[in-house]
Length: 384
Image 1 (cartoon, one colour):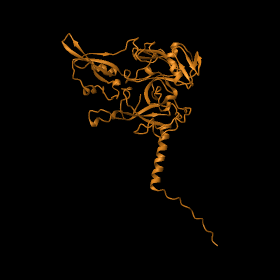
Image 2 (cartoon, rainbow, N blue to C red):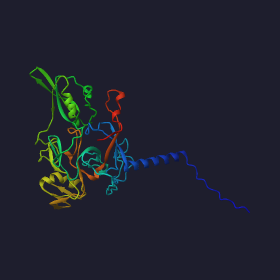
Image 3 (tube, helix red, strand yellow):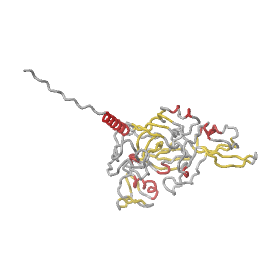
Image 4 (cartoon, rainbow, N blue to C red):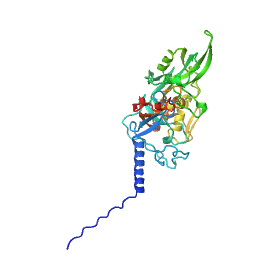
């Protein structure tokens, strides 16, 4: 009597629709994990980092450098940030909010790093879903930051100036026919259009007409946002009478961090110490102006009320405070066209997204010709 072998059962073959679904599901899960854990792609929408980073640059941001954050808002449509693609429908739910932790990284934020972070004062979104900003880290926890006539000092010592840093200049010339094509020769490009006309800052624009009494000519001033090296080139152009650097004068503060009592401005700012985890400060009217918003917004202290002279937590007045996390001071390389820590304050450590590593693609939004649409020289360039 022969023994019969058991009949093996074959798994039913997946339908083409099921295979497509499984492939898409795997791709979404893999892309979500890579985006959260390792690296994420971003694009530069505004000129606040010119000339270091340009409008139309596409870059990769490493999450591994500083350590990946665990999600605070886990109920979210995969591969979205604030809205579902192409709609105004929120892509997340705040029904579940978790404490945020950071996995170990292989470095920490350093002075001079180009960092992506969540915009701290954007209260309509959870902290981990606030709009992504990119700036250069000027001050790390415990640093004393100061600007003296546009030069940055850290702990009383000058900080090396990145090569792409820009400021505002007035170029005085008798030639009133300069247009975008002319300025493009000098790398000064109006590649950004803010939809809000009140925030319509251009890299070049006619500024004011003057009368040159010595030669009976009418001069025009062009306001140009550019580097120091390019400003020197303008001085050699025929017909240019003068190139003047615009510097805000000390004591003429306008809307900068710390309130009107300081009279700081974008060119003369500080000295101001960046808060450090474990640091204890005494609360006075001056320190409340600088650190009261930090205690109220970012330290998870419950109900905090801040006045010009007092801070209360859950109804109890406090005279000193110990910070629970580290903070950073960020500035754009386009120093006269950047909304940064000089205006809205410090970046909490739990808002840090990652380190900008390299530009993998760069598209000129307003090229002179189709063939110049891609900025070939910027492809796969390391971010300095």
